[in-house]
Image 1 (cartoon, rainbow, N blue to C red):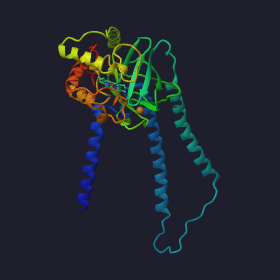
Image 2: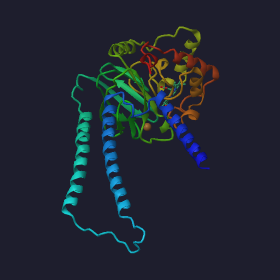
Image 3: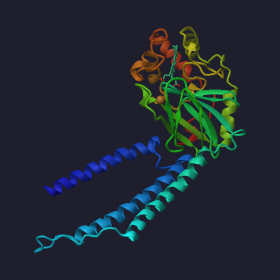
Image 4: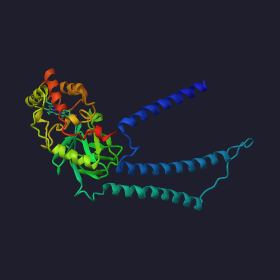
Amino acid sequence: MKGWMGKIKTLSLLSFLAVVLAGCGKENLTALVPKGYGAETSMDLIILSTAIMTFVFVVVFVVYLIAIIRFRKKKGQEDYIPKQVEGSKKLETVWTIIPIILVLILAVPTVAATFDLADESGKKDGINIDVTGNQYWWHFSYPNEEIQTSQDLYIPTGEKVFLNMKSTDVIHSFWVPSISGKMDVNPENENTMYIEAYEEGVYWGKCAELCGPSHSLMDFKVIAVSPEEYEQWVKDMQSVDPKAEPQDAVAQDGKAAFEENNCMACHAIGSSPAAVGPNLTNFGDRSRIAGFLEPTKENLVKWLQDPESIKPGNKMTGNYPKLSEEESDSIAEYLLQLKPSDITPESAGE
Ligand code: HEC
Ligand SMILES: [Cu+2]
C-alpha cells in the first residue's frame, strides 16, 4: 500500500512540474527567470527574503525540536513539570534585536530598489511611450516618433524605455513578468515606470488587474530588438502610406470592404492617434491576433465573423455590419498583408 501511495505522489508531482515548466519555456510568463532590469531587481529581493525566511524557519525549528525532545515527559515521571522560567532580560533583548536586524536587512535594499525603479533621470532624452489600457487590448503611442501601434510593444535592448500609462475605462495593470514589475493603469491619473530588456526576444505580458469578462485574454507582447533594428523599425513604421493599394485583387477587394463596413470608425491604419480599436498599421507583423490568437487567416476570419465567441464583452461586437464569408476572407487577406517591417516578432528570436 505504502509503495503505491509513494509512486502516485511522485507521479503527480512530476506531472505538475511538467505542466508548470512547459508553460515557462514558451511563454516566458515568469518572474523567476529575469531578462530585464525590473525583473532582476525583484528577483534579487525574492532571493534575499527567501534566504532570511529559511534562516528564521531553521532556527525556530531547531529550538522547537530541542524543546520537545529535551523536556519530554520520561517514563516514570507521572507528574513531571519542567522547570518554570520567567523573565530573562538577556533572552528578551536577543529576540527583540535579531528580528529588528532581519527587518533592516530586508528593508534597506527594498526601499533602495523602490526608489531606483522610480528613478526617471534620462526620461527627457530617452524613448517615451504612451501606454493605454482598454477593455481588452493595449495601445502604444510613440509621441516623439509619431508612431501608433497596438498589442506589440517594440523597444530596443539595453536601454531604459519610459512608459506613461493611462486607461480609457477601468483599472488595468501592465505586467511583463520576465522584464518588469507590475504597474496599475488608471483612468484618472497617469502612472509612469521604465522597462529595460537585456536580451532580444518576445516577452509575454498580461493585464494583472481584473477588468471584465475577457480580462484573462488581455495579453500583449514586448518585442525587444537590437538598437539598430529598433531604428529600422521606427523608419519602417514612419514611412507607411496608409492609402497604399495592395498588390493582388483579393486584398484590393478587402481594402474596399474595410472602408465600406465601418471598420475605419474604430481602427486607424497609419499614424493617426488611437481610436476605439487597435491600430492596424502593422497588423500583418503582429505576433498574435487580438493579443492571444495565433496569427493565421483562419483565426482572423473567425474573429471578423464572431469576435464575441473569442473575447466576450469586447467593444467590437455588434458595432459593424455582419460580414459575408467572402468579405471576411478578402478583409483578412488585406489586413495580413499590412507588413511594413522585416523587424518582426520572429526576427527578435524567442
Ligand atoms: C465599434 C468599434 C469597432 C468597429 C466598428 C470595428 N472594430 Fe475591430 N476591434 C474593435 C476593438 C475594441 C477591438 C479590440 C478587441 C479586444 O481585443 O478586446 C477590435 C479588434 C479587431 C482586430 C484585432 C486587432 C489586433 O490588434 O489584434 C481586427 C483585425 C479587427 N478588429 C478588424 C475589424 C474590421 C475588419 C472591422 C470592420 C469590418 C472592425 N474591426 C470594426 C473595435 C471595432
Ligand atoms: Cu485589463
